[in-house]
Structures are given as C-alpha cells and as structure tokens.
Length: 431
Image (cartoon, rainbow, N blue to C red):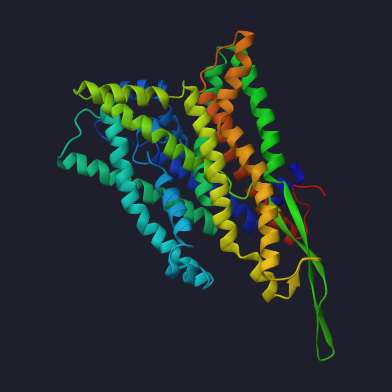
C-alpha cells in the first residue's frame, strides 16, 4: 500500500489531483471557522451537549455547525435536493426523458438540482435559526436587516460548499460532496478521542466498536451478487462479434447511506415540533408537545425502534426507485445480452427484481443495525456497569460517521486504483 502511495505521488497529474483535493478541503475548513454574527458561544456549546439533531447536522455540515459558521448547513440542502430529484425523475415524464438523453440530459437535471438547493437552503437556514433561537444561541434574531443578512450568508455558504465539492469532483480525486463531509468528520475525530482519554473504559469500547463496524461496513459495502450474462454472436461480413460472457453486479447495499438520511430527517421532525409546542402557554398543547418530545428523544426505546423501521423501509423504497431507473433488462436486450436460462424482456426484468429484493433484505437490515448501533452498544454494555449515552458524539461518529468515512475511502481508493492501473502500476488492492 505504501508503495502504491509513492507511485501515486510520482505521477505529476495524479499528484496534482491529490494536492488539489487537499487544498480545497483546507479552504473549506478555513470557511467553517467564520462564525455568523451575534452567536452566543456558551449557549452554543451547551446546545451540543444534549441535542442529537445538532450532532447529526454537525456531521453533515462537515463540523461547521459546531461554530455556527457561514458553512453551518454544509452540503445537506444539496443532498436533500438530489434525493428529491432522484425520486421525482421516474414520476415526472419530462425528467425521465431528460435522463434518457445521456450526458446533456443529466447536466440539465443537475442544473435543476442546484436551483432547488437555493430555496431548500433558505428553508433549512430558517429551521436551524429557529432551533438556535429557542436555545438562546441567537437571541437577537427577528424581522430585521441583520437577520436577513444571516439567512443569506448561510444560503451562500451552502452554495459555496457545493461549488467546492464540484471542483473536487471535476479536478481532484473522488466524489467532492462526500469528501467535504468526510473532511469534517475526520477533523472532529481527534477531539472525540481526546475527550475519551478521560474515561479508559469508553476509549477501549470506542475502538472496539469502531474496528468491528469498519469490518462489517467494508464486508457489506463490497458484497455483490454477480448475475451471469451471455452475449449472442453476430456475424458482420468476415468478422464475428459478441459471444463473450460477463456478469451484472448487483450490490447488497445499492442505496448507500441515503435511507439513513431519510429516516433521520423524519424521526427528528416530531421531536422538533414537540419541543416547540412544549413552550406554548396552552396547557393542552404543552402537554402534547412534552409527550412528543419524550417519545422522539434519543433516550426513548420508541425512537430507536421507529428509526430502525424507517431505515429498513426507506432502503427498500430507494433501492427500488434507483433499480427501476437503471432498466437493466432493456439495456441487456438492446445490446444482445441475456441471462442464461432466462427469456429476455419482462421475464429477465422480473428475475433481476426478485434477486435485487432478496439482496435488499440483507442491505436493509444492515443499514438499520448501523443506524441504531449506538443504542445497541448501550444495551450490551449496561449489564457490565458501563453507562453510555447513545446520543453522544462518540457513537454517532462510530455508526453513521463511519459509514460515510469508509464509503468515501473505498470510493477514493478505487479511483486511485484505476488511475494507477491505467499507467501499469500496482495499485492498492492486491488480487
């Protein structure tokens, strides 16, 4: 592996891509420390001690929410816009036609995604500011010019983060949006470990959970079912084309961490509404709000069970949407390919769908367990006299954060592997 790293830096163009990516990450980290005016830093630190929502958003913002900087929302509104566009594509015929137009159509859909990101960033900024105002982090926020400027700065920060991510994708190494989030998680890891050094039991447990989780994530993320495909022979003049055998890889986890983002967005919403209602003067509404806030808090068993069910359900839903968009059966038929023993067309489509749904069962259970890993760990260690807060930063980093980190590392290594292989160098992965 070290030899592969040396080989990568020996190649001028590949070295430039790596250094460019690191430089963009450095720019993002600098911007993440530019705070929004009027923030009460003491109240902000208190807010992060007991707020699961804030900790999750802090991960997705690349660590910028912790300072409530102009990059506080990170690329989260863009991720939401991308998910919405993916879900709308098979529903709206015009978008479906654009997707079939190749590169030009995809560029048009990307433009729509960027335009949708702006209002979503504005609304997300309003929501974040409302939460911060309730926690007295922004006590002076109201209908004035300074408040509008704060909203505009947060929205501009999101678009700047998306632009930096696009620069990495185009001129660097890896997926830029994922690397922006990855950089924030990695930047916060030393602080988490420093906190854990005060409690040796938590430190040992953290590393054990981290090692086991990384092993499981790599094992499942790389897992796939290879469907054999045979291409028929075609004789054109004196040449014979086709006739080769290959395979279609169907991944165990074809949806990445999108279902977890979906379920997080939904599971935390009732808690936010409950917290707002609890502050109202009407006793009935206040009582309902307190009950909702209690049910959907990270200390509630109902919260974690609902989180697991939502993650499993969204995994099936999102995988089905993406799989239907790929239209593998039709692509194989056009290229003269077929699955041995399966008739082309609708029969092949039904066969591939059945196989994908069986694989999705494993992927859905896997993502569900990753989502509720903090709660499971707290239950396992409780009989041994170790008390762990499942909503703490430690185990959010160990579950959702590790899923992002490992996924980004695997994707980036594959890109470097491809670059080195093209230049006849031995890559990172030994075969």
